[in-house]
Every structure is written in C-alpha cells, then in structure tokens.
Length: 454
Image 1 (cartoon, rainbow, N blue to C red):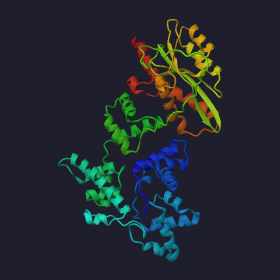
Image 2: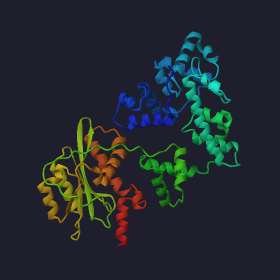
Image 3: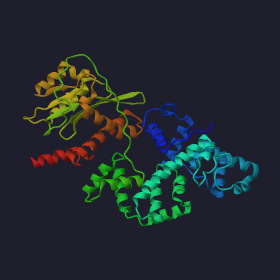
Image 4: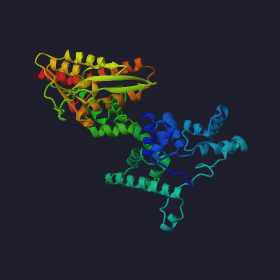
C-alpha cells in the first residue's frame, strides 16, 4: 500500500504540537493520525532546517553531495533517518539507495546515478495534463501527487490573474516564492512553465533589489527582542512608534517572507476550585471595562509544574489598563499566598478608591477572613458563576498569555529559575509589552498617559 502524503499545514501542526505541547511522539501521532516515525522525522528536520526541513524536496543532488552523505553515514554510523534529517533529504530511502550503490560499486557508482529520484521511488509527474483514461490507471500515490499539483496550479493562477497584463518572469518568480510555503516547488514550476534555474536566477535578482531590506531588519529586531511573542499587528504598532508609517498588511507579508510568525498559544491550565465558605454574587457580570484605575480588579490562581514540583501564582489585574498591580508566588496553594497579594494590592489604593474585586469561586475567596479583609478596605467582592470561566475571561486570558509567551518557551532546571522568569515576564508585560486594546501602549504607559490627561 502506498505511503500517505501529508500537507505542509499538517506537518507544521504536528511539529508545533510536539514542541510546544506536553504530548510525546506516540500521543502526537495518535492525535493527528500519522505514523510515529513521521513525527520524529518531521520534528528532527524542523530543528535542523526550519520550515525547509518539512517541505517537499527535490532529489537532484550532485555526485559530490552524495559522496559526502555516504561518507558521513558510514564514518559516524548514522541511521538512514538521521542522515536524511541532517542533510535535508526527502526520504531515508534515498540515503539507503546511495549507501547500497556505494557498497556495490564505490564512488564511481555514485557518480553514475542519474539525476532525479532514486530507483524504486515514485516516478516524476508528467508535464502534460492527464486524460480521464490516464487518471484511471494511476496509483493512489500518483493521484495524490496530481491533486497536489492541481491545488498548486490553482493557487498560482489566482495570483497570476491579479497581475493583469504585467506578467514578467521576475513577478512570476515572486509568486512562486510566496506560494512555496504551502506548495511543492516542483508543482509551482510546472504550473508556471518555468525551469528551476530560471526561478533561482530571478529570485537572486529580487534579493539584490529588495527595497524592504531595511524594514525586514527592523521587523526581525522587534520580533526577536520580544522573543517571538509579537504578531504582525503589534510589530506594526511598534514600527509606527518609531516613526515608520507602514501598513499592517505589508508587515504581515514581510514577516511571511522571512518566516517569522507569532508563537502558538497553548491552552491554559484549568485551576482548582472548592466548595467551602460563602459565595458572592456575580456583580462584575462580564463588564470588563473600567473608566479609571483601581475601579475594577480581577484575580485568580494558576499552577506551574516542572520536574514533579509545583509553583502557584496569585495576581491582581486592573481592568482599566490590564496591569498586574500585585502578585505572589508560592510552592504551596496556601492562604498566606493570597494574603500577601492582597497586602501589596491594598498599598496601591488611595483613600478615595473602592474597587470591585472579582474572582472565581475558589475556596480561598470564600474564606471569612479573606472576605473580612476586603470589607475592611471598602472593597466590593464579586464571584463568577459556578463552573463558568468566561465570567473571569480577562484573568484567564492573562494566564494563557503568560504560559504561552514565557512558561512553554523555555526549559527550567529549578523552581527558582521558573520564579525568576515569571517575575521578569510580569515586569515585561506591565512595562514593555504593547496591547492592541490600549492603543498600542503597554499597561504602565497607558496608565501614565491617563494620569497626565486627567
């Protein structure tokens, strides 16, 4: 039975799930319905070569390249899969064929291999359209290849139509380059009627006259400064703050050209809840707007787990500017953690402030001592309805952002390292990370601007 082919989107989804999630190769394979060996091969290829490692590849390699691969395989005793990943070759079958030829006929045998796919692999696709009779004779694998080509051809023709009468080779080459992220290069070249050498020639010419080279450098600088947390909208706002008037669609296109994308958000951890004590009414009622600072606060507790140990975070967020005004970290979910958070939050209040403090129905917020502290400070308590996380959506959203932009991007050797990373991220979140809902300002910048305007 022919081996199934997977789209680039599927491969990218598999790699992202494995690298940024908690599943191993077996569970990832089961989730996406692919082979476990495919997961390992795609992940390894991505780690070594980026997106080029999981796109469809051409096997027209030079004799010198084949000899170098075989020498490395035999000298370092590499497996065929590892060699294919290291040298970005389409399949370990290609490497195995080269090794067998070398063992039988030495380097002269590798010199005599004809360009193209190795013996026993799928034949090249025909350049002419297939008739209905010819289609009926194709194998399932060949049918998938033809369908893949037709999709690439359709995407290419749509882009080509948008050019109108201006259809120069350089523009066609640019279209192929843009679509190459989603379609095989060989299919796109076939659709365009362009040779591989012509495409490379025109792409090199485009690179020499790239009028956006400086802008791309600035985009890369902003992207890496924020550790991949910014998408094209935030990068656009950052560029405008630097005095560069640029359209967000241009930034989006340039980010795609240099293979930059905002990191995938990982689903948040579901916090524990309790039943003891007295619950308060849902006074907030999902009205997350606030006209001034210290008018509405939200809070919750989230958990981090590394190496069998846990760290708990208890923050207070001001709905006016989404600023974390106080927080505490603890290795145990005890009441003292919440009390510490409250003391620091109370210190931010002026005599005329009387905020609403909203939480879920966690046991700590139902305690009489906790409720008494709020009452003594003139704070009105509000609670989400039972089992309804959307009632505290802003706090939940912060936890998701924190984990996807900080926790899941690094490997922590100890709770101390994790604690320092969280403290650093909260400072970054408050003072540097711009928000689209705050007119492109960070929470602290927005609060400072509001104070000046008052």
